[in-house]
Length: 190
Image (tube, rainbow, N blue to C red; front, top):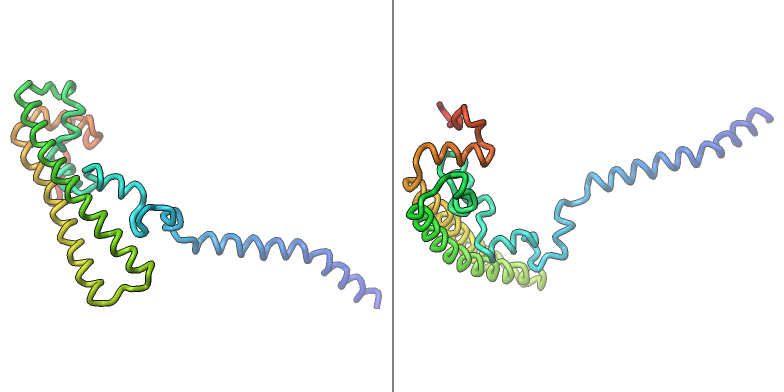
């Protein structure tokens, strides 16, 4: 009887420790299942982060031209930011600026249209009015716009690259951290 009493008391004393372990486990489990999208609940458009909306409305590349950037096709905004270190001539600066402005105007126009369409899609989901046909139409239209936006950014990289010398491109790649200045960018298959 006394042994059973000791076991019961010991179990009761260990209960808070075991309970803490269970609660700690539940806390960790809830953290591992927490959505990475939780912070987007306050975004002006559910489905896009505040940063994505801002990038779209302000014509920023947001990674759309990464394929060009990583394959020796410098970006106009970054070239202009680095014009002193790249020793751009006045003519080069003027040409890169013109390409940037052309790209920026079109990127902002497309960005506004994308944000508008994303907003409509978000509202359709929020209002529970989305239907398969409407979903298909809206997502296909968005895909076309995102494709045009990416093309706009890539086209600007393509336009300005011939304006730069191989040395300027190598310096650009070094300043952007893609190379150490001695080793060229390694290309796939080379």
